[in-house]
Length: 420
Ligand code: AMP
Ligand code: GLY
Image 1 (cartoon, helix red, strand yellow):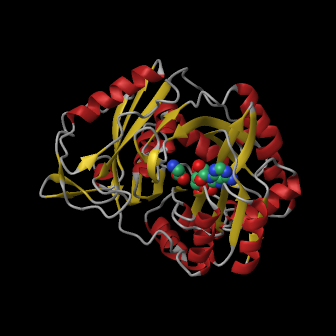
Image 2: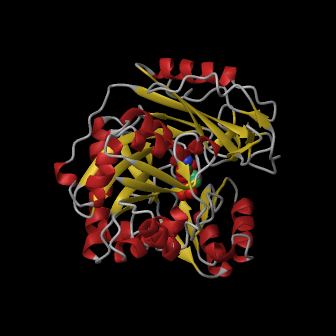
């Protein structure tokens, strides 16, 4: 089959790497891709948020299956447009993608299906929001309702911080995403992510992961998109997974179907776990980045069969074959990230690294110029390895990191510390 993947980060490199191992994959195109993806697949320049353009491109290139990586095209209705054109695709409709694109919508769904989550209020004006804040006290969490590229959540330790966040959001700091604000109870516990496929009816768990969101070692400093991740997440014991499925995921999926907007795709279930009880922090309607990289490392080529079964409504007959292994990815980022960072610094040493089913460097933000790989984003490389234990995966990942020569980059040395 001819397959088109939309996106150009480490998540899409990992998806491409896994999908290409499946013998069903004949031709693989990634739009827009990046320098690492270009070494293994065709890259195409395409406006991936323009459903019409994606559908025309798919028709012209006899694409049989489109896999949508990021949330923006999903929220923009690219899956709807492809489905209307009769093109098979992996990823939810815009209506179902509201589970990520509107935080108040997700809270409303949790209320409707009694899924455990933080108590909350949602507001369209600053005065009412401030009154609620004062009544609740700190610590408290302030969230812009819409998509804000991971920046719309402020975990406020003091009321002053929370009020400043309210002012910023209603002041337009997050554009339209902050016109509505959700204020939530601060939940304590350990955070983990749970990934399930859903075809509108059947739910199939495909793995758990934990990531490190803070830029600094010991989980300190500003939030980032994720500085590293590992799978499985030790805190996601079978009993916790079962509770999350029965109390949160299945009721949500049933409520979405009942509303006439069934969810089809991968659901990223962000959980806070305390005393064995999971509560929902957030949903994302796509694979996590960098969580996808560790999941793909563990799943390999079977992932294409799973994504196809999901898109075709055949999940009831699908099975996941797990190796009892562990995977870790270490993010290498450009100096300055998550603040202002420099682009264009040269990365060497990548050619000499192993590329096999246990070791893989996924590219997140790279370009090729004159035969050299240069950094073109904040998060640039995802150095990923598998092992019989998390310790072994970690040793392999850092052994690769040590062989990469990139003076313009940095990384955390302590990925996985909580689990080890
Ligand atoms: P989100 O974009 O919803 O994932 O929020 C970003 C991060 O903020 C989460 O990964 C959590 O670490 C934290 N967070 C969000 N909501 C809460 C909450 N209600 N209680 C505690 N931490 C939270
Ligand atoms: N790593 C967090 C995310 O993909 O949202």
